[in-house]
Structures are given as C-alpha cells and as structure tokens.
Image (cartoon, rainbow, N blue to C red):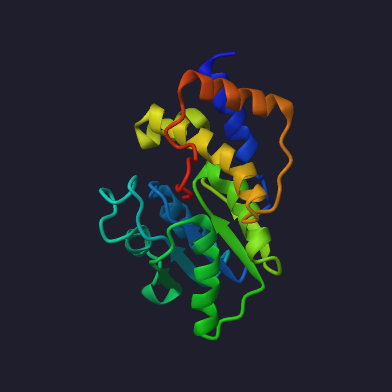
Length: 217
C-alpha cells in the first residue's frame, strides 16, 4: 500500500455521509481551513438553517493565519459571502472540539436560544470526531454533519501542504479512540483495514499531530 492509499483509507473513514436537511442552527468548527466558513455560507444561502455559530479561538497551527481567532475570521469570511451579520454568533474561546460544543451551548442558553437540531460543519476529515464529541457532550441535539465535498487530492491542493494534511488525518484518527477512552466522545466503530492504514502512516513518520501528555486539542 502506498502512503496516499493509506491516507485515502483514513479520509474515507471520517466521512459521515449524512443526508442534508434543515436544522435550527449551524455550528461551524474553527480550524486552519477557511473552507469551513465558505461551505457554511453556501448552506446558509440554501436555507438550511437561519442561524450560524462560529466557534474557535486559536491554536499554534492557526494563530498566524487567523490572528484574531478562528471564529472571528470565519464570521468575516461568511459576511463577505453574503451572510447577514445578524445571522451569525461568534464563540471565540473554545480551544478544543469539546469546548466548541459546551461553549456554544452555553452561548445559546445565555441568549435564550433553545435548539433541537444542528448542522455541524467542519473540515472533511473532522466529521466523525465532531459527531462523536457532540453525541457525548450534547446528547439531546439532533446532529447532521456536513463538509465541503472534495476528494483527498483536491483538498490537499486547496490547503497546499500534503504533509500537513496527512499529519492532521493521522491525528484526527487517533483522537477517535483517545477521546472516547477519556469520556469526551462517543465510541466509534473502526475496521482493521483503517487501523492498519493508520499504523503504517505512523510508522512512516506522520506523527506531528499525535496526542502526547498534556496535549489534547
């Protein structure tokens, strides 16, 4: 198996393939990928939801691109694409996927907004982890995952950094069971072929996003 074959196996694993439908809100998860904001804007213009919460502070991997915080820059990009300011809330303190949900829920509660369903919008390979986290931390929320439809090759081209994408893929895969074991996420099934692909990529050296002691984003 080649490196790209193994990366494709992980990419496929993280796709949730949820059928689109209308929800009360959207939750756009901050990251290095501005495409999340652009996809959120596209769905808003399709009348998929009336309200968007962009959530995310900064991480070492995003502070240079988004110095005022991921959620702030995402909101500005959505506004550039025609989403009205009044349709966007900003949660600018979350530094983990778990906090994306707990702080978003707190923000909505503080404004008297009661939501039963949400479209969670993330980078393509974060979908399964986002779903598992939401199911554990916000179990009464009806969740639909969505990400811009792209092939792995096209996604790498859009980011412009193969090493970064592959390292992130490996890291997000590891977080599926690490966060479940820690009680932060609902356990997810994973087949032997996907685990083998993950291990080969680790053995090849794609380890920069693996969780080590004291590092949990």
